[in-house]
Image (tube, rainbow, N blue to C red; front, side, top):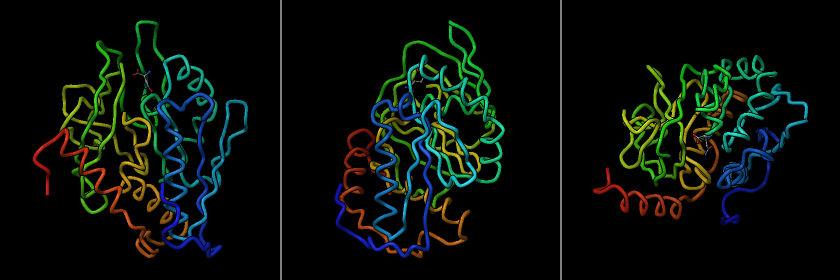
Length: 261
Ligand code: GLN
């Protein structure tokens, strides 16, 4: 990623604390790339970004957290993490209800809900969001293109990515992250993908979701900045996203045509 653009002088006035939960277990397809993207997009604007990696045995405090990343993992890793997260469920719930920014991907997304049922048994979720997941067959594996319909100002163009999950997630009356233009989404049936709840984005889009979709990255940063300082991301110098935008459009036109305006 180009690291030579934008304002890299920190004003020392603005700092975002990013907490990466369990990177030792939940880092499928390089979910860590999302952290790099947040860091760089802060740096280009002169905003300091501190990343705290929280591994399984670490004590976790969300008191100073501004953005939390919960990545994806196999069912086995998900079960280990789930048991650990139950112990801090109330902290996580307080953080979410207070409008804390969070990106939860795939296995992490499923854990936001009430449960994930598999033939081996039920994995109790955190019930942070009213949704549930049941394992189905076959796995839903595809490139994916979404259009968000609830936040047209923040997410004005398509969201692209890759999905690989056995779980079918049902979000009831919650707002989806996007409507599926290409791919499977939450369950392959209702054309919904992911969920938006307060400051939380839950999604099946794996790996480097944010580098492929800088508008999604900026939504997380905007919410975190506003919650902490009451300022808007638009008040900072915007990075030149022309390359990212071109790459995004190339994926959209490959899998979904014609391009939406
Ligand atoms: N174990 C979950 C599923 O297959 C999530 C897997 C993942 O994070 N890729 O549905």
